[in-house]
Length: 308
Image 1 (cartoon, rainbow, N blue to C red):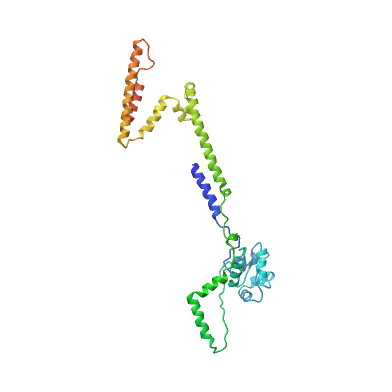
Image 2 (image 1 turned 90 degrees about the vertical axis):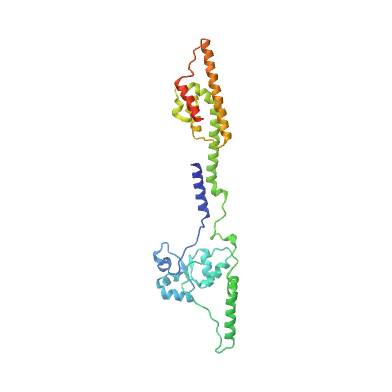
């Protein structure tokens, strides 16, 4: 039972401190209910964008209530919106996904994160004059970059910033420390100390107390408290306890059989010696308190022989 309780506490502490605690808001995208119905969320969620941009135009066209609400939180520059999120003036800043990914990767403290799926995909183009001789050259070079993986390499190079892993306090859990498992180890130490105390008390009982208690406990009162203690105070109880152990014991090798035969032989010699002593006592006119052939005595001897 103690091992089960200790394992349960240890596992609970381990699971609690290994689970990553996300300290940012989870969004599904522009269609998130906190953005689509901003007035129904208490406390009201503060978010904005840069006015007169493609993002602002898209929101105005498809999410009129959202657009009207976010007017009070809009910023004139992208840098101002990022700064407002870092300072806590805004809960979220909506803008072009590629730009936000780049700015989040450049944050040295790694306190920025982009959430949700992209709402609309747009592309960028390079303008040339009509019938320009550089169009085919540019297209060929661009396809070569794409097939060779150069575009992906450039994207990783420029879009991966200086975010330090050691400062990603919002993305990972802290290392586990001893203090986080203090309760489990305190329980383990308490169990060890309690077991040592009980073992010491049991040693004192069998070494010093049992022989005195056996003289005074004639009525078997200690057996009402503990069956093991009651059995240990009488010879018959000790015999029964040994019988219970031997009943479940079976020899599996010849050496064990040899030892059992030796013990049985010693038992027979002891019985013969007891009979001889009883006869000598009767010859001197001493009446023994118990005959060697009493029924209860013979039954005990027979049971021991059966076990052996």
